[in-house]
Length: 211
Image (cartoon, rainbow, N blue to C red; front, side):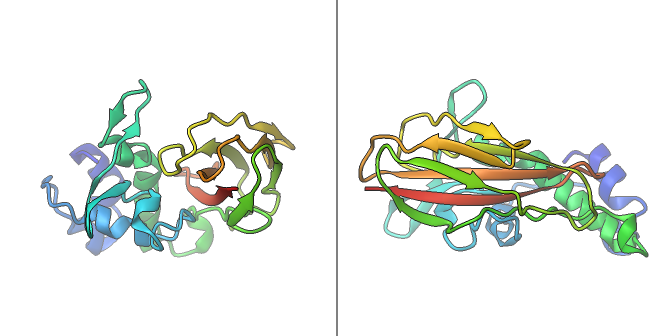
């Protein structure tokens, strides 16, 4: 979110409110507190520790929270990566909202897709159970093409096994086996991306409590 990006996507040609956005970077810490309120499907507004655009804080004492560590692309635990893994999606979301400020027709701006998974978002399952998740009901208000990506949010859960997703139907369905980790929790994320400008994402999370 450097100055050239802000000029191109926010402060120039996007109306008086966006033009008033300050160009200086300051470390204030309010943004992570606000980001979970954006309805992107990760449901972080219900529990800050679930992880999402607002980072992934962990309890250290009483109600005191501090940044957790997510494994970055090199496999190193990194507290900054709890935010950085979502940064491009969040920036594009902001740029789209700036476009909404000046679009005089719905069709002149891009809008977030709607991610959908059949069934409950919190499930109790057995170790070794075979799961099929169906996202064929996902849609886009602009009729853009959609891509579907399934991934395990390992840091948000307590299960340590790496899940092998078998994807079919152009990514709309996936199957996998619940690991043999009774008492642990597994978080699976569906990430739906459109092909509009800017490219926008929405998510769905399914939490599996293993018995």
